Length: 251
Image (cartoon, rainbow, N blue to C red; front, side, top):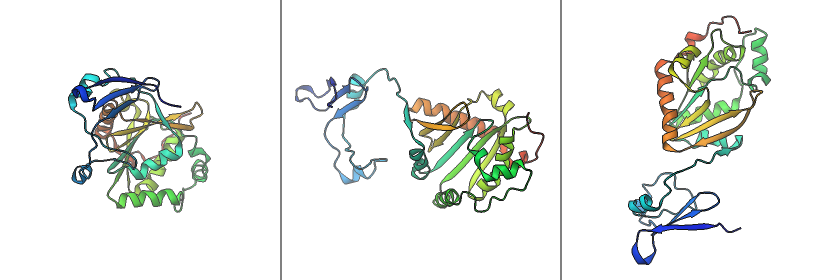
């Protein structure tokens, strides 16, 4: 089915190029203008995917005829596509973990070992995941997390404190932050990853603490708010080893 396009305007006089159109139904913006063809120019472009064509438009064209109010449409992806983000980023992947439990943890053999009070044997656990992390770290990429911990910690949080040994061995940096400090700092009660300070993957859970989908956020002002959260959390968080003692579990 063909799009319903509205002509917004052109900044090039009578020849009609370049121009701005808007999809009436989706709000997407369509630009057309002269293609960027110089190999030296194209080589400088980042994230240019196969099938994409770079074009050149005057800045004034976007000012005059681009949308003045943007309503962000949620970009929700499945878990398979989410997994691919961990090999596609270039520099840093950072996570804030705020929940008191994660249902997926409780389905594992290691969680059962932990709850029985047995020493958890992390050797060989999630071998494919560990191999991928090591591979990405070997490429110079960084993985970091800040985990919020209650006082006293929940069973799930204590399990993740033990799990941090495994994550650290594959190259992740794990820090923890008391819940009272997170509340004092006004940190959001959201779980999310930030990739390269330009893409946020907001993790959506159901009422039973199962991860159901992931919402991608790329709007610069929104990403900046999450980056500011990261900076505050990193400033106040402490290495997980300082939380490794096992106080009583929350009822």
